[in-house]
Image 1 (cartoon, chains in turn green, blue, brown, orange):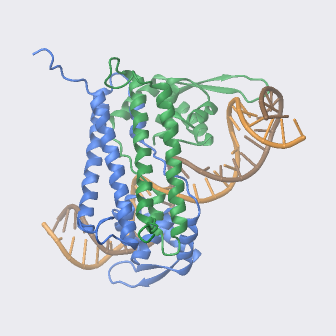
Image 2 (tube, chains in turn green, brown, yellow, red):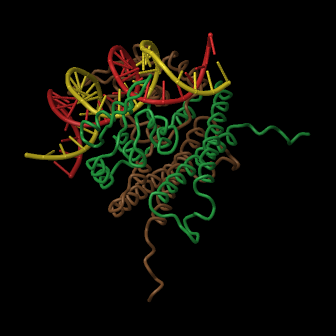
Image 3 (cartoon, chains in turn green, brown, red, yellow):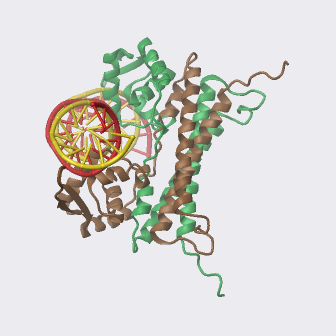
Length: 190
Length: 190
DNA sequence: GGTTTCATGTAACTAGTTACATGATTTA
DNA sequence: TAAATCATGTAACTAGTTACATGAAACC
């Protein structure tokens, strides 16, 4: 049950509406816990009932009122409580892994195409992460340099590096499989 | 919707009951798509209705009848269809990443303890995978050696290597974070 | 004598997705 | 004039979890 907490983190960085949160979740913290706008609206209402967030309704002309949510003291307390409480280590549920095992003779062409698709998708996501790294954490601001990052910026950077690591892992895994499953085209009889 | 397919793969390797599948899912294919026994029973019934599996009831004394499921032709066809159809690239939903971002001053001790827990858990899982590798894929049976693996054994091995890669990634990420977040104990004034 | 194993199930719940609706405003 | 953006919502669905129940057998 961590969508609550992901929303609290995002709102703590910047108060906003459900709609804005849904948009933000297309990037940033959303890389690690995405959600549809319906799910976000529902959870926001629940959090308001519990007093974790407060809501200010801003009237607008020509469209529904905007509800701007802000983290309340109880919300911060909940975050602190949650951090101290052990959670399950992240567990990968890989559809691709099941497909590899599911492949039977006659499906190899489709399987290889699918692995290639996944490799390229992970490579593309890696590019996005690297761009964010370049934009938000330029060279001198590293972990060990003369002006190492601290506080929220450091935490943000560490999470981004985790994302990069994971995507690299996925991509290399796909490439490994392609190498192992693609019959080497015979260069031995010219 | 891949639990169906994970069950088909497992049943295709060896026909069995829901109970047996739940036990198997504690390892092997279950590393990549686990499920509770209730979920498994429900999906098995649905697959039987659809004709993907057939069910043979084996009476037993002193305990409920055992229902042994076997993959039917329609089940194999479904696997083939599913492999050819593109699926979403695996996406990591990391509770730990959210915790890193959620940490505020005063929660660092708890956060570091939590990261350490996760590092150790991933390390333990890595040990399990390496043991399986040693047991099922001893040295000579590699990808490039004189007798390279083929068929189902190769696919099993490739998935296992993926699991190892992922766990190494998680563990190294945790260690990185610990290094970056643990204040270096001052050795500079003896 | 208490726990674990075998083997299935019901019921109630939480989490998350998909489809649809509204309606003005800006952009192509 | 068609599509995308802003901003929320209802309704119906699928997926998955938690708690509980049964009852014999084997293990410690």
